[in-house]
Each structure stands twice: as structure tokens, then as C-alpha cells.
Length: 408
Image 1 (cartoon, helix red, strand yellow):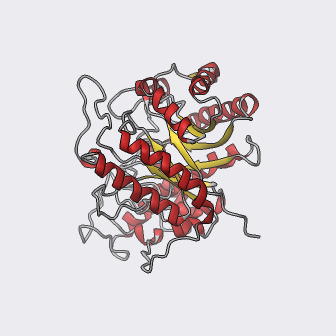
Image 2 (cartoon, one colour):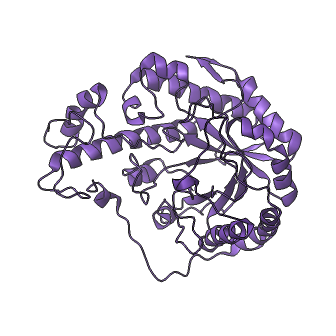
Image 3 (tube, helix red, strand yellow):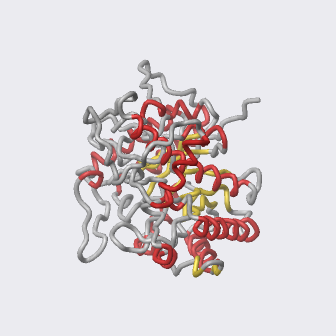
């Protein structure tokens, strides 16, 4: 029996860190515009420039010591400014600094390695279970879904997942045996296996590289499956689960290539993907880092994260750090903001996808023209999102996860 796909939803994702408290007025605007679903970020992790993702105290204090009053306070603070809010709650399974230092292993950068560490898994599953026990008993009338998050930027990314380690090396031979494959030598350094072509491995001449790449991708996939399965046991049947995963359209993503097994074994209700990993130029292709048709076939919705950098966005992280270049190159003025966001919203509407506005470091949605567009977009969304019959595109771009293993 084919289940009905999750109806497209519209949401607002709160800013990271200290910028959250500077943006309560934007939350109030979203409330007035008619956005009821709010994504909160009760995180224990620091980001890549060393700042805390959350400006609240740690929830996860020690092995089995949790202070869920901190989580309650975050939700209560939102309700002060948006009393009717309903929540999508991120469950941050990355290691707090005290655990990463103790194990000499940081899941933010080594999620495949952590998947083989018994102590890390025991403690992290303990945190997941305790977190969900609390939210499902204390906030079950408010929570509509969870985002199960781990790895770099919560997206299950491990850009050096080919990097060897003692744990991965020891387990590799067993993995080869389980899969009926020859027990090849493991690489001594990351990407230490030369390839004949700059971009592609030869499947006949470079078997070791392909086998190792498949192995490390399966490690991450196994962990995604285990976390989703554990979460399902703790939540109400109607509550949805999402993951930042299956981003195989983004060539810089590693750890996602075994995504079809995850989607078939422990299917989430929705998969999330960022927009800012694709060209932001007006007239550019935009598009999704997930393969939407692959998800649709399995009745899994795609949540398009609109994290485009608007002309009013704050990129000053601290006195010493201002983000620039690459994905942080944003739209230049309000006219581009409006045109670009119309494009993003239009694509989501046409394809029957979910959508949220992410106010990353604050300032994203303060411009009057942008706010006028969001107000109009909410009205259009409520009318037309349930009616979408899908894209009328005549060109199909096929991306095969199996073939992607051969990309160097």
C-alpha cells in the first residue's frame, strides 16, 4: 500500500547563537504573516569558527546528566513572542566539547569513525532517548516533528570520510568479509589511493579506492538508520522525522551515497537540503542538493531550506570574523532579494515541496520589500500548495548514487 505523501508545509527556522535573541521581532513578524511552524535549535555543539550554535547553556552536561530545563526555556521564550507556535525540534546528536575531548573524536568532523565507537554510541543513544522522552511527555501538544542531526553543520557531512582511522581500519576487513569482497589493504592517508583520471576512478584498476569509499559511506548510513529507528520508538505515530541527508547532487558532500538504503530501511518523513550550496545569481539554475524524484517515489517529502543570503543579512559573526565569498555571496539589493525568493518559492510550490525561511545569523528578513513578499507568499502558499500537481519540466536530470562512488 502506498501511503499519502506528507503535505507541503511552510516554516521559519530561528537564527543560531546570540543572534537568536536579537531577532525576536522577526519571529513576531513571521507570526503576524501567518507562519505557525517554527524550527528551534537546542544544540550542544560549537561551529567551525569556535562559537556556540546555541546561546543557551548546555543541555547535555555529562554522560547521563541532562538539564532539559534549558530546552524548556528555549521553547517558552519562543512562545512569549509567538503564543500559537508549533515546533520542529532539532535533536543535535553531535558531541559536546567535553565528550569530543574525552574520546579524542569529534562527530562534527568524524561521524563515520564515531559510528564504530561503542562508548560514543552508547552515550549518544542515551541522550537521544532521554531528549525524546522529555519532549514527548512535556511538549507533545506543541511538537509536530524532529530533525535528527549529526555531522558537520548537522547535515551528516564528513568531507574527509575517506580518511583512515584505527577503528575504521580494524573494521574494514570484517566489512569486506560480510559483503563477500576481497580483503584489500586500507589506505594509509586520506585520498592516498591514486586515480587514473582527475575526476573518476577506474572500476577495474582502482578497486581498493571504490571499495573503501563504499565502506565509509555505509558507516554513515548505518548510523542514520539506527538513529531514525531509535527515534521512531520514542515518538507518537503522527510526529514527523526529517534528516539533512541524501544530498548527492552536491559534489562536495561525502557520506551520503548509501542514501537509497536509508530511504528504504528507515525512511524519514522528509529530507532537508540547503539552497545556498547552489548558485544564487538571478537567472541561475538554483535547484536542490537532494534528488527530489528519488524521494517522491518513496513518498518522502523534500524540505527546501531557503538560506539564501539576502542583501540585509548579517555575516559578522564576531569582532574578528565576517563571512564572505563562496556560499556567503548574497543578493545585492532588495530587488534581487525579491526576485530570488520568488524563484525559490515558485520552484517549491510547483514541485509540491515543503519550505522554510532560515534566518541563519540574523538580519535576513528585515527589508520591507522582503517582508511584503513573505506576507504575500504565505497567502499564496495556503491557497496553492495543496493543489500542486508537480513540475511541468520536460528535461530529466538523472543522478545515480551507485555511479557516484566512482567520482574521485
